[in-house]
Length: 170
Image (tube, rainbow, N blue to C red; front, side, top):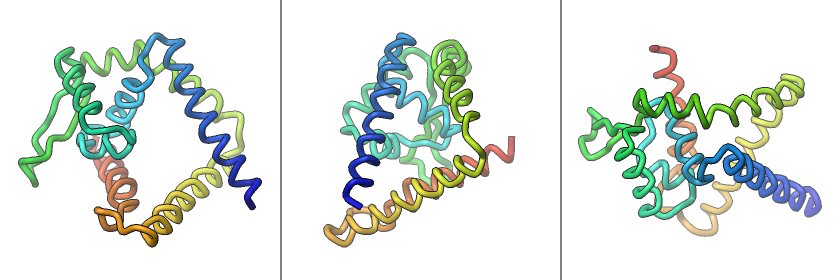
């Protein structure tokens, strides 16, 4: 099993390197691409706190990118009606235009590449990665109690369920 784990990690880091290089080729800062990509996928539901978790970066770095995007008119911050302290991040029309011009090129390549696989392969890969992440979080939680209970559920499932609900409304 150790061999498979090493291959999984090498593949993960290779994939990250591919995205970093692709962002550079398209003239986009790799970290800013990651943040913009998450904001785009979030459909206005993503918070700064979630961005910090998803990017695995310190708050100040994420905050600086958010301020930069806001100053450029690419995003807007919407106050959550349920909790006034929380602001949800959404792309503006200008942000969506920039997405279409620059960032979407990488997504189009992804879509092209994913078509090379059978649907069953894609579904199995997604299922594996979700379960692997959940198991890893659970095991790490046994070693050291995380500040957030049900971290995986809070970060992944709840957030993406809200996004799917919002997409169904539109």
